Image (tube, rainbow, N blue to C red; front, side, top):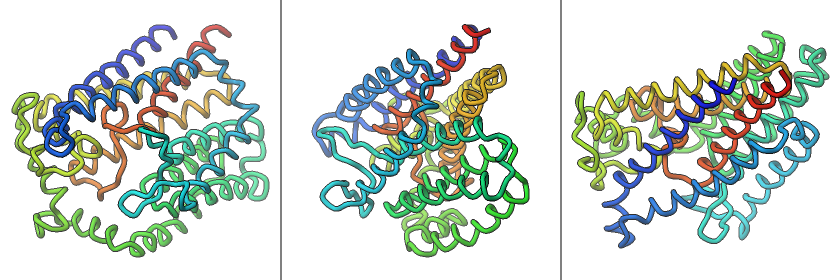
Length: 364
């Protein structure tokens, strides 16, 4: 298990270091022109990394099993924060979305904490009541009630990307825990018109779907971001144009250092660099799966599964969006994209994975 932990941490560290380089490369010109400081986003990212490292260390050092006793209070805190962020004067609104608390120079996004709280809660529930998971009244409906509450609060912000993640995490963990396929299939099918209605309810979401279908039909309008992303990836060729030499980051590609940082990686490091990033994520997830499979504690097993699913889904969605394989969603690339709450809590769950592995080794 120690070797697995070392390899998981090594791949995580490689992704973080690449993120530092690419954030400075992708944001330096923009930060200099708009903020007068080319290192503005780099410095803030390093601050987030320090905070994340501290939280990660805490998650590594505590006994993760103590989280099981606090699963319900943690979920309650997450729900309370999701309610408070919607209150004018408490939650901060940016571009029409009220998703953040402003804590001085740092913005805290409670939906990132809510995803982890949900994983801990479901891991506790499924490990304690495995025999009741197949029950409609005692297993399925309580889980759906929690998922529905979180989804309703997150979509109110509005944040469809994290709403979708909460939905996928819940039904996937329910399936792994032994939930009835009929129940899961029914909620999946019934959710399709709901997500369709949510897309149609917001014009910008409809525009994203149109852009996804054919970004080149209107490359200067609704398809601008996706077409610029594809230009960046195509311009990199096999070897890339070189670190710092991206053209698309020069005010062509929006969100170059956040949601579309993979496009800049493809441009500057080429196909080989982009492939290396994907393989690093695959290697990281594989090491995590080895930890999960070796875990004999049901709570640790379900929690590891939820963490790996959450991280893997974010990677798949982000890379899929930048390549035009999925409609645009505002989900950062774990460990690499610039961002506060997402980076900090993603580092925290890596600490939990390492904790689970270490605990299994000690107990074995």
